[in-house]
Length: 229
Image (cartoon, rainbow, N blue to C red; front, side, top):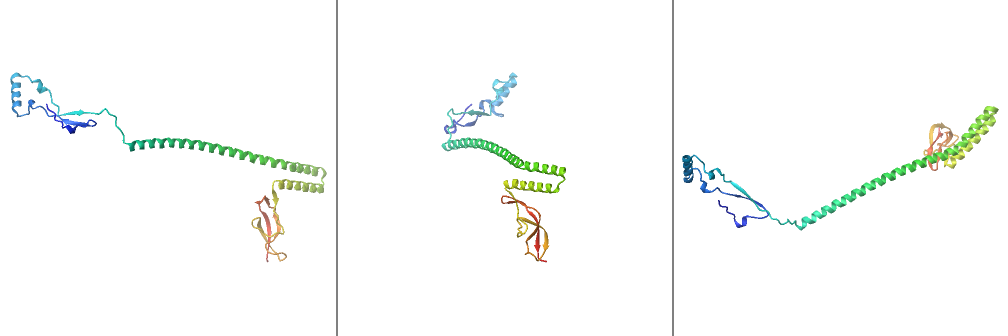
């Protein structure tokens, strides 16, 4: 068996398949060697060992270099940048998670503080109204015992004045309406009154008082407005 390998055909860092031709001594059908072997088999009744051994059609010759494969510099640089980008992404993700958790905690604390302030404001205002409620109870009890209408009337006026003072301390004031020029931002016209005694668009009657909290209208005045006949 003969193997022919050109000198430049083998690269020790790659794999090559090399075809191995069967030995001619085994003979091919129709050749003198094969006829002689067939005759020998017929005479002796045995098959030679070399005939029983099949010659391979192909053989793989693998040669690998033990040297470590070296990557190009640009590939190394790309790998380093990828690792740096992954590390930075992980750091940014952790930072985002911490910031999000801090924001949720801040929002929860703010909501709790606002709720506490609202409850405190209601409590403070309720304490200022309790004396008014006490005076109402005293006035009703006194009117039931004495049956004195004048005393009840004066007591109610006193309570009303006390209630106004409590509201004014909180910034709640009445809106001036009757006799004033109609102002759609403060007044709500529910009726028109034809008259020649006063100019047009003058509030001639206040049907329901309006109130402001500082500079904000919390309830407009329900008024009757003059107009030409």
